[in-house]
Amino acid sequence: MAKQYAMFCTALIISIAVTPFIIKFAFKIGAMDVPRDNRRVHKVPVPLIGGLAIYLAFTISVILFTELNQRIVGLLIGGTFIMLSGLADDIRPLGPKTKLLLQVIGAVILICFGISIRYVTNPFDRVTGMADIGIFSIPATIFWIVGVTNAFNLIDGLDGLAAGIASISCITLFIVSVLNGRMGTAALTAALAGSTIGFLPYNFNPAKIFMGDTGAQFLGFILAAISIEGAIKSAAAIAITVPILALGLPIYDTLMAIIRRSLNKKPVMQGDRGHLHHKLLDMGLSQRQAVVVMYIISGLLGISAIFATELSTVQSFFVLISVLCIILILSKEVGLLKKNKGEENQ
Image (tube, rainbow, N blue to C red; front, side, top):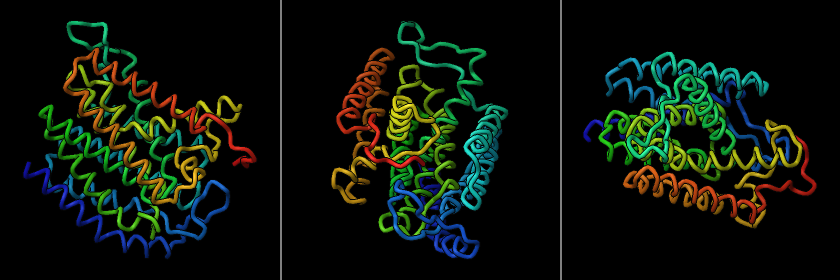
């Protein structure tokens, strides 16, 4: 565990030390988030591109302490590509189709370096509990990587929200990796946790800097890739359950957004003010209170993911279905599937 501890501390220190310089750099190049619509919670311009600090802390830590094998190199190249595409979007906004194309290219980079989903949970197979998806491996991997990347991008709506949830997801995947003896994956999650936790003091309300697409897309991309290596490729019982639960809150919030926009006959890629953090604010919670509530939800999902590692394939699958049903019921109760009255089209 010495290496994992060293990677966490190194990433933490770099993130804390580098972020103030990124803030100055953002002001210098004019990379600012200026509130222009009712979906923005902040009222004054805030520096963007804080994700650069997370990227540098994670990348340097990984290069210093890990063996640069094929998959690690692929992870770093793909992560760098996604970070740069996010940086470009923060400086000069890209169109949705362009962003999607760049995310697909990032996923293809991972596939070229051997990071892909080859097996999924099959609760009806009492022997292996797994199913080889064969030719569907490539589209499944692209779907997972692009989906999680966008999920973290969409949930980055309050100060400290995406960074905190990413930290919780990292801790969850770290514990799962250790329990399954995948210490290499544990090292990656330790480095990413240090990067995000070091960034949080600058990003928590009131935020001095936002991570922007530079950070949100990078976090989603790296977590999606790590979950493939550390969870989907491990024990059959946790092949699908653990990644979905560990990264649950961003995934479920995105799923609700897709359903909500479809029900309201709106384009799936059109923004709205119907995400969970918006609903919590509408209920009267402050930014900090809403973020803490979402931390707690993410933590509970993480505990469920860890618990699922001790169950059989059928039992873990039942846990996943149960959690999905509960979330659907709660989503309906808080109005996640409804369109806000008077909502402006974005």
